[in-house]
Length: 389
Ligand SMILES: *Cc1c(COP(=O)(O)O)cnc(C)c1O
Image 1 (tube, rainbow, N blue to C red):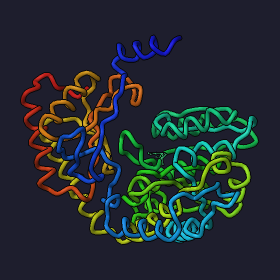
Image 2: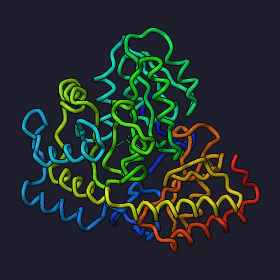
Image 3: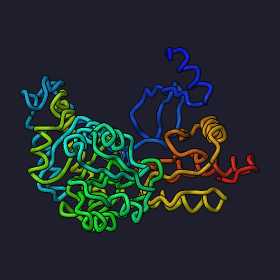
Image 4: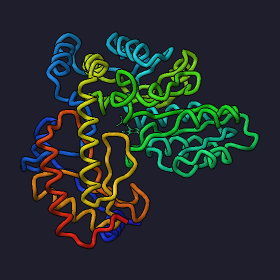
C-alpha cells in the first residue's frame, strides 16, 4: 500500500501520533509547544536529567574528551569513561560483569539475538516491552507468550524438550507499573532448566536497597537472574543501557551481539555523566521516600474519587479510562489546565484498556500533585459516565 493510504488509514483509526516540542529541561515545570505545563509523563524518576552535578560531569568530560566517541567499541571508540561506568554498575548491582549498549532497545534485541538460535525456546510475558518482544521474534527461536503475571501459564509454555530455554520479563511493567514476581519465575525456570532474563528499565534507581532495582528487592542475584538489563535514560537521567551477567555472558555479547558491534559507542561524556548520576542515584533514599509518599497520596486520593487504578507499586500510575476517545478527552482537559498526562491507547495497550499514564518524579512537589488531584476531581464531576471499564 502507498504511504498516503497507510497514513490516512492510521489517522482514521485514531492511531495517528504527533510529537510535542519541548523547549526546556526535563523537569516538572516544562515548556511544551510554547505552553508552560507541569509534566506527569517523564521517566526521569529522580530528577537527575537536569541535576547540576550530572550536567557538570558531562561538560567537564566533553571539554577533556570531546563530544563524539568517533568509532564503535571494537574499533577504537571504547573509552575509559565507558570502562569506569561498566565497573561501577557491576559493583552497584553485585553482578560479575556489565556491558554498556547505546540504547535499551539495542541491549534487548542484541542480547536475545546473541543468546537464541533456531533450536531455542523463548517465553515472554505478554506485556513485555516492545524491544524484548521484537528481539525474541527476530531471533528465529520458537517464540511463546504467557499471560501477564501468570506463572503457571509460564510453566506450561516452558515444557517440551528444546535444548535451550529462556523466560523473559520486565521487572516493572512500563505501561502498568506492576512488578514481576521474579522469585516465582526463577523457581519455574529452575524446574525447566531455563534461563531468566529481566529488563528492569523502570526498577533500577526506583526500588530495592539503594535503588538496585527489582532483582535486589526480591533478594535475588546473578544465580537466579543470569541476564539483567537496565537503561540509563530513565531514573539515571542520562542515556544508554547495559546488560549485567557473568563474564562469559558479556564476553559473548561483545563477540556476537550485532547491535553492540555495528554501532558507534556512546559519547564518552554521556558515560561520565551516567557515572555521576549513578553515584547520586545510589544515595537517593530521601528522594525515593518522597516519591513513595507522592505515589501513596495519588493512589489514595484518586481511588477515593472513584477512579479505577492498577495494582501499581511504582511511580508509573495508570488511571483506567477504557475507551480510547474518552482517554484522549481526559488528557486534553488536563492539558487545558496546564497538566501534561499522556493517554495511552491501543495498540500500545490491550483493547478497551485506554488509560491516562501518570508518572511521578521525586522532583514533583506536593503542591504540584495537589493541582493534578484537583483537576482529576473536577473532571470526575464533569464526567458522570466514568466507569473505568
Ligand atoms: C524504555 C525501555 C526500554 C528502551 O530503552 P531505551 O534506552 O530508551 O532504548 C527497554 N525496556 C523497557 C522496559 C523500557 O521501559
